[in-house]
Amino acid sequence: MGDKRKNYVPAILDAVTATTVSAPISVTYADKVTMLFTATAGESVFHVQGSLDGIHYETAVVMVHNAPNNASQNIPRLVSATVSSATELYALDLQYLGYEWIQIRADVTSGSATADVYIEY
View 1 (tube, rainbow, N blue to C red):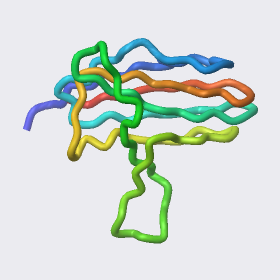
View 2: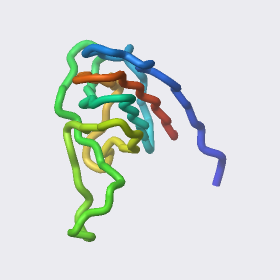
View 3: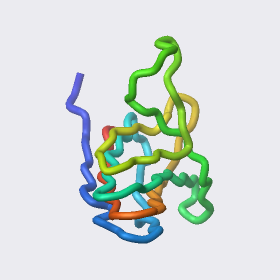
View 4: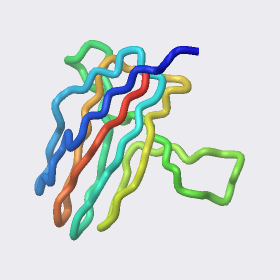
């Protein structure tokens, strides 16, 4: 078993204070894509947009949240992540869908938003 290749993209969104979409991030051949979303002194709603061609983006990309839930056999899947004055970890649901490119969008209600992305190949 060889070493996996990893790519860490820190602060693809860096303390933005208005609705902002990140630059495209290549996730071609990714096994895992994990995102760290931070809302500072307020609330932000984070979304992942996915594309097969780098031009046309789907805005309802499904994420998995690591929060505990009552239905332990089911993993909660979401198309947006609301974060209030905290840092939360999410992952792309790559079990059934794959993308060549993703973008992170933050809709900032108040405060600021930061997003980091970790990709494992």
